[in-house]
Structures are given as structure tokens and as C-alpha cells.
Length: 403
Image 1: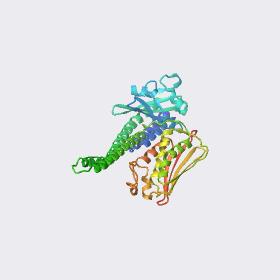
Image 2 (image 1 turned 90 degrees about the vertical axis):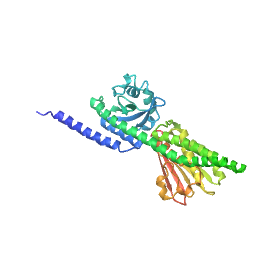
Image 3 (image 1 turned 60 degrees about the vertical axis):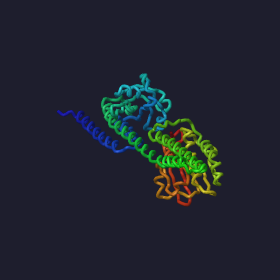
Image 4 (image 1 turned 120 degrees about the vertical axis):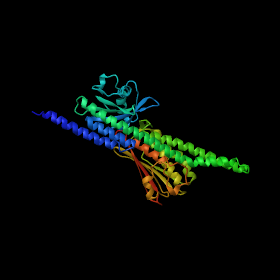
């Protein structure tokens, strides 16, 4: 007589394996790190029928682990948490290179309780497997709290391990592609100022060059060198943000203060160009949980860009309003606007609107960095513009309770 329970189990196993193959194909079809990480943790949560899942990657310089992606409402907070190699479940998995199941974290000294404290999430049980690529453990894939309340099974461990093996290769490929892609772009962008430096350094040494020309050429060399230095700093900043290595603070931030500080910094530049710079924000807004310095950087980039491209007599207006679960901030100007065909590219790294080349200094990284900072805070940024009638940049951030 056929065991119907066994048949049911076999069918479920085949279904899970088919689903695993489908997900593996999907993971290996993308080299974009953030969507890849999200796809992995969603699949892990599905396979193990758990409340949440996360990925931690090893920082080879510090020897610590960092949450790179996490499902659920705690996902934003998790990404700022540093996990030590010693005294943590993830650290044990990295050091031993094998899966670990903790049925009750309250009784296991390897569980890092500060992660729960910082994320305001309660972990009861955990399954963690290593992410091994080319023989090296590059991180850990974790799932926590079975929805049924049951303990993790051998099948859970097996499925998550297989998924982890596929995920590790995909993550490593994405990291390598991202690194090589960025390096190629920064080298390309640096060629122009480097060529200018070499050329003018050569001209200074010509016997017929006058002292006045030497002084002029030296100024150009200094300007181009400063441009390279700024470009390199922005490049490193963007690389950290894109790879998830820029770890943001999660303190309570008063966005009104951030806005006024940025406007105060840029008011002298606006006044010098006879540009009106106005602020229209309420007396109070709900706080956001985030990195005040990074959000200040966002405001400097957006308002600073408006000052760069506006003409004498134009106006820039910064507004903010609070909703139940998010804040909205807009930077609107009456400047020349952005051509419609260039709007889809405006947040791409190194992109400059063709009609503005040479009009204002910069490497075209500011808006790419701005978008990454907003997204790292769980928000979104958009742009609308009509050529000849100004531009509006708008971003939203979840309020502290929503985050």
C-alpha cells in the first residue's frame, strides 16, 4: 500500500526544488547588488516560512559583519547595525563555515542581543547558513522565527544552504562587477583633468613662457588637481553607498534644523548671484531616524545644484510637510529647467546635462550620491522639470515610527 504522506512530502520537495531552480536563475540574471540582496532574503523567508530574513556581509578590513539587507519593518534599522565576529551567531557561522540552528536565543551565548535592542525586533529562534564563494565565507544568510512557532527542521537547513550557495556566487559576481564598473568610470572621468595637468606642466617648462603665463598655468594645474581630489572623494563616497559599506547613523533627526543649516551655508552664494533663496517649512515636523550629516549632504547637494544653475533674478524655494507616515521635502527653482530627454538620466553617476557642460564645476556624482543616501534611509527621490520654467526635486522619508 502506497504511503500517501510520503507521496505528499515528495511532491512538496519537488515543488520546492523547482522553485529553488527558478529563484537561482533569477538571482544569476542580475548584477545589481541591492535588488539581488532583496531577492535572496525574500526567497529565504519563503523557503523557511519565517517572519524575517537578513543578509550580513563580512568587512575584511574591520573583521566585523554588517547587515546589508533585511525584510520587514526593521530592515532600515538593521542596515546600520555592526555585528562582532566574536559573540554572535553570524560570527560563529563565518568562523566555522557551516549552518547553525538556535532554537531559543535566550539560552544561547552566541546570540548578539544588541541587534534586537537596536532594531526593536524580537528574535526567538534563528537559522543561519554561510555564504561561501570561491572557498571563502563572504557573509551569512539568516532567517528568524518560524511562523508556525515550530522549530527549524533539517529540510529548512538543507533548502537554505542550497539557496545560500547560489546566493553567494551571485553576490560575489555583483560586487566584482560593481567594483570594476566604477573603476572604469572613474578612470575615464579623471583622464580630462590629468591631461590638462600634464599639458600645462609641460608648457610651464618651455623657455619662452613668460612669468605671467607660468602663474596662469599654475592656477589651472591647481584647479584641475582640486577637481581630481573632489572627484576621488565623491567616487569613494558613492562606492561605499552603492556597496552598502557606508553605515549610517540612526539617531533622531529634526529635518527642519537640517534644512535651515544647509540654506544658511548656501545663502551667501545665492546672494552673490542675486538669486532668491526662500524656506517654507512648518514650525514642527515629525522626526526621522537617520544620519543627520548625510541628510545635510542631501540638502547641500540639492540646494547647491539649484544655486549653480539658476540665473540672476531666479528664485529657489525649499518646502517641507509631514504626513502620517512620511515627510516630503521639495527644492523648487525658477531656473532654466532640464530638457525632457535628459530627465531619465539625471540621477546616473557622472551624468551631466549636455547643455550645462562647462557652466558649473563638478563630476556629475552629486545627484547619484543624493539618491543613494535617500534610498538608504528608506525614502525616494524624484525630479520634475520643464525647460525654461524651472525644476523641482522632491524626496520623501519615512517618519521615525514608520521606520
